[in-house]
Length: 512
Ligand SMILES: CC(=O)N[C@H]1[C@@H](OP(=O)(O)OP(=O)(O)OC[C@H]2O[C@@H](n3ccc(=O)[nH]c3=O)[C@H](O)[C@@H]2O)O[C@H](CO)[C@@H](O)[C@@H]1O[C@H](C)C(=O)N[C@@H](C)C(=O)N[C@H](CCC(=O)O)C(=O)O
Ligand SMILES: Nc1ncnc2c1ncn2[C@@H]1O[C@H](COP(=O)(O)OP(=O)(O)OP(=O)(O)O)[C@@H](O)[C@H]1O
Image (cartoon, rainbow, N blue to C red; front, top):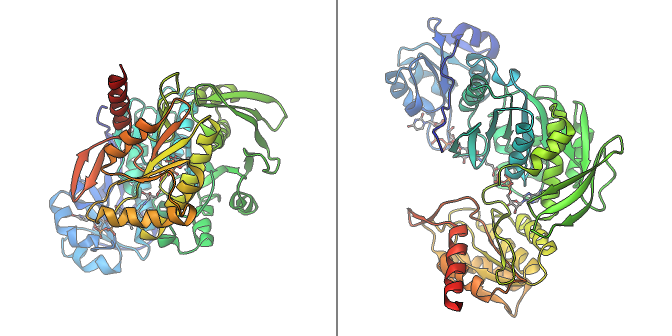
């Protein structure tokens, strides 16, 4: 994968006085031209605006001197950071809403890139990454170069870099969008996580279309209540952020959102039992190779056949949302459908590693790591599994302990065989994590029939393959696209796909 330049090569930039005029605030020091922006002193390039933001651990202003020595031309901060920033001798813009100001300032410096190409924003609890890849496929049918930003990677055409975050900080986002424009991207798609919206990372981004996928229980350590979580997402369905909206109305939150949206909106229904919407995905059926086919009924009642390589109704929802959003952003419908059908594979999301044949089970790698995610993906698997579903999964260490029993219950409720193993235990005792998951398994299946606890993960995958017949599906959830397993501070190279292939090879060798 070639390296991706995260900023444009050439930037006209903006005067600090122009930034002050746009964001407000209190300017201390001389006017100066800024040609870049960042929140990280270590990433400062000469001419940058260093945005010194308060953090959970430390205030960014603690690094103002380092930013100055790396060539920062000015600092934007809040009242708490003012003294340290002023002490550098650089011009300082003090704002009471520093995160919001940082976003607006970066957009000013980089010339408002989202106003120079259509950007589609995807938000919702589940399916953002998958849907973004499908939207990218649809956009590629109409544009030679397309940008993508999300949990797995940041991409411009054929250049890509792994992501560290779902939605990056605003200064980096604006730089990346500007680089996309400079590289000739005709359009871009990006995931907008609810935390990112709350933390003003997408502020100053203009979305040609925003898409809502669904909402379920997650991130309540951050948002506290489902209502607060919902309202945060609803913020970008307004003229401040978006020109048009596409909303999946399969869940009650989507239907609620339609009433709140203050931009033109198109609704999409994809599940049996959903209300009839502007666009409707109907007659969904599995294909022999594990994908899905369905009919998309357009607002004019025309019917369009769609066939995707991804399994289950969740991916019918993702595909329908992607087609309608790309179409809303100007891609002709037939091209949007063809583009979604031929989109790049989504790494680690319902990714079929081996298709079923006379001797081999279907094997699948997935990223579900919430109770609802596990239930949804196992329902998806049921449609394409004539035999048993065998799930191999664990839970990350040093993360929300309270969701672990829920993962166990969801697996025991929806799979035939449950293999509990390790994920990324980090520095937590792995047996404690497994025990918490098994509490939930026990609640659903007290006699523990077809429940196994096997570690390390590679042994759990191998055991699952050994017990699987060709009618069965073996699915490993939780690690998705990850390429390492983090144990006690060490990242050991590991992929579930690699473990599946090695186990299948070993079993074949023994049987030959
Ligand atoms: C809770 C939260 O959002 N934390 C963010 C916050 O980290 P922090 O508060 O720990 O930062 P800190 O270490 O105290 O540092 C404060 C400031 O000093 C700066 N700094 C720090 C060290 C240094 O040498 N120089 C320097 O300039 C940092 O860049 C930062 O701006 O500021 C950092 C830099 O701006 C962010 O990277 C970090 O996001 C962390 C990694 C994170 O995981 N956030 C989560 C909540 C998140 O955003 N998640 C969603 C995913 C949602 C989904 O599941 O889909 C996402 O969009 O990725
Ligand atoms: N439309 C959907 N509804 C419910 N679950 C889904 C849907 N699409 C995918 N999933 C499940 O959620 C998992 C994560 O999917 P995906 O990465 O596309 O979502 P995401 O919103 O980007 O989540 P994250 O930010 O955690 O990666 C998938 O591996 C699958 O198990």
